[in-house]
Structures are given as structure tokens and as C-alpha cells.
Image (tube, rainbow, N blue to C red; front, side):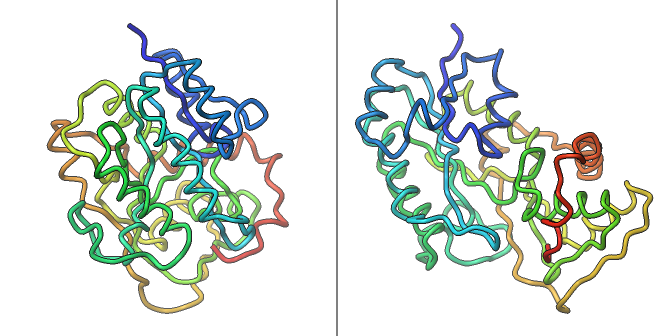
Length: 291
């Protein structure tokens, strides 16, 4: 029987991609804010009771960056999560997207048991931390911990790989504050991994959903430059490497029996072609910030 799935955050980067990629294989619902206010506990309960989903994929989240500040970020992220978690009897299970930020520190290839060694200081990470603590005691809520995800529909004026591609397409210098190694996962790979999670019973409550292979920003910028053949300048403001941001994915891969990730250069080339076709949507004035 076809699974009935609710994806929250359908207008955001991850939710929008998953709704597109999973639709057809599953019966996907991804209501806009006008149809379902995730901050309204009564509306969420009524919606869940009316539809009885097999799986809720909770991708909705607010976070701040150098361009925008999300008001009441901690309160709203917690409220959205618990509006679904408290009514877990109204659906089969929930796959919640956590974050490597919930570890509270950056240590290379952080494994799942490293969680709760530190309590995060910032509001975004602390909200994720609280959700992760809740999933440990729940019977049907799972924490899929993401690190770096990239692909179409992401915030191109802020996220490094998309920002670098858009800069090159507009004949600009690729810029970054400092070089750092990130554990980047292509959005198409994430969708394939989510299909596996949807179709299998899970042994653990938390999984690091990541590539466990890092790339430094300077190397990624050079990949973009090579793909473009435009020979852009690359500017790094500060010397040295910042703290690595990566996870250990061995728990996930052992349970899955392995997974073949898209080659990074192929993924960037595909994303480059997508931005090239959508260049009319990119305002170069919004790219004049460091990456």
C-alpha cells in the first residue's frame, strides 16, 4: 500500500526538494502555511487526526543568518516540533531533521553517542538539542541529524556552494571568511536516503545522515571554477582552517548495507547547470557578501 506522508516546510530548501522527489512513489502532502499553521497546536492536531499519516517528515525550521534574523527562533522551533511530537499517536512515526549543531561543539566525525557531552549555547542548536533529547524517550519519533546539505532551492545568497556558483555565473570573485572543512551532502542523495528510512524499520532513534567525507571550502571553490571554465578569482579573508564540521555515518551505513554517494564534482556540475538555467532569478546585488 502506498505510504501517506506529510512533509513540513514544503516551501523551504529541504522540504521543497523532498516533496518533489518523493511525490509519485508516496502519497505526499506538503501544505502551505495558509493551509496549515505549524505554530497552531489545535490546527496541527486536527490536520493529523483528519489524515492519519504513515510518516511525518518534519523539515520545517527557522534559523538566522547574516541576512535575516528569525524572530522567536527558539520558541517557534520548539513549538513546531512539539505540536507534532505530542500527537505522535495520530501517525505512524515522525522523521525529524536534527542538526550537527546540537552536539554543541565541532569535533571531526562526531558519532551519535557523542551527543549530550555538551549543551549548545545558541538558540537554533539548543532547540535541536531539546528535540533530540525528546526523541530518545519516544516510541516513534526519530532524529535524522543533518550536517551540510546543498542543492537547488537553497538560500543562494548565503549558502557557500550555491553562492560560489552564482558569483561565478555573474563574473564575480568567490569569497569566504575562512577556509573550513564541511561534511556536505547533496540533496538528491538525501532524498535517496530518506526513501530507505521510509521503507524500513529502524534499529536506533538517532542517525547521523551525512557523507562522512569532508571538503574544504577552497577546494569546493576550485571545483566550481573548473566546472565553469571562467577562471574566477578566489578570495579568503583569514588564514588557516576553521573547526571542521562533520559526522560519523557508520551507524546508518551498517544498517543500510552501504550507500553510493554522488561524486562531489558531478553534484556541483549538476547544480551549476541548474543555476545557469535560472540565472535570471539571481540578483547579483545580493551576492556582494562574503561566503
